Image (cartoon, rainbow, N blue to C red; front, top):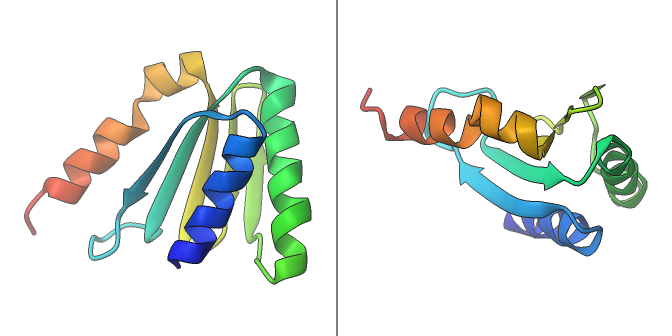
Length: 108
């Protein structure tokens, strides 16, 4: 699992994604074990990052279960890893990190 996460974050970093964050949700009641969030520079950059991840990881056997894309937000579902590529405005607006960290730290 850690190798997959490292691969994803290295691709995002090499392609100039900003503020890459990995949140470990394993052991919590959540749809994925890990969430990776990165800031995109513009809508075209988000789409380019998605394509780069797909072109690099699919030949290595990674399964892309689904993708959703808008100008401000790209979501990639790898099953146990969920990737959010967001514009700076959307990332600030939705603040997924805070939500996930609160969920992660909630007892129960």
